[in-house]
Image 1: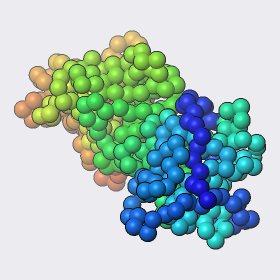
Image 2: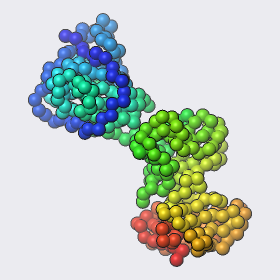
Image 3: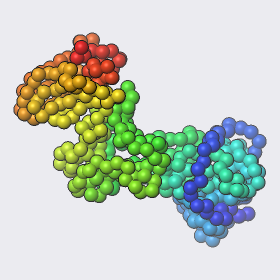
Image 4: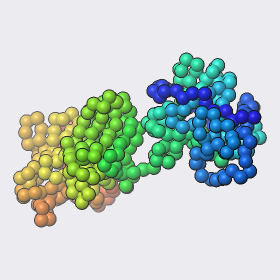
Length: 402
């Protein structure tokens, strides 16, 4: 008997738009797959680690090094298989009837792509998508994981078929389908956020998503807060070694840039949904509240000089001015203001919903607060009717300029 491997790799780039397969709880056994060759009793084995397992000494290696995995860019051709262990406890076979089937040694079918056709192949594309294609390389099934470049598919000793990201986290499994990346709130210098990936604030309420349409968008509990306004399939967000944060297109063209510079800068999404770029000492170099103003600001947060909220139709602005005055402007000029003054003042929205204007020495020159029954998280919204409104966590208006 011989362990079968793919006859050739296929170049990445196939776009798979079809549905994923299903987990099977029973059914007729799949087409019998070939067993593993001449395993040595001295072969070391880890019963729990989903490591890549090289062929044992003396075993047929085919073209690929590992018997339990399909690596990025590799293909599993018709009647070729991968194995969970030397005893063939679980086997994934690309059957000659066109279906990719995972079965146990007692004949149970655990997973199937549900595809059919002559000379189908299973490919782990270089973009991370697992695709079953027909003889003409037309996609018949996919895992929908095309935002995971460099991922590899491993058949574990527990029988689960798992696609692992380059960082070792699972992106997809036959048992669970798509698996979300573990949440992280920051990117270090040199890191990239690919489409379909996101930053999540430490409190779990906010996300910065590199969307498939090419836009980098910040979301809060009530919807979008800010965006780069970029478009393009295959866009990616990069914090470069020179400190500039850039949205690149698939053709490497610059679609948006923060214009920042410096060594060892970090991009982080804070607990009020603001995307910040800070230096190693924590000093602020750039933030989305100032550079990408939207209509919403969440508590706790600060609107520094020049920071503003802009209504969704761009007709109204609430601006923290350099003279210490916080002013709402409409098409015809100022329509509301705090009438405050003070060098280096800022609007502070506390976690309890209290809004204050504070000078750099901490003097409060204006304040407003919600009713005692209000609950967080609180947010200020510059509405399209020109009203600046504070809402509580239940969507109730608790303060407004009129």
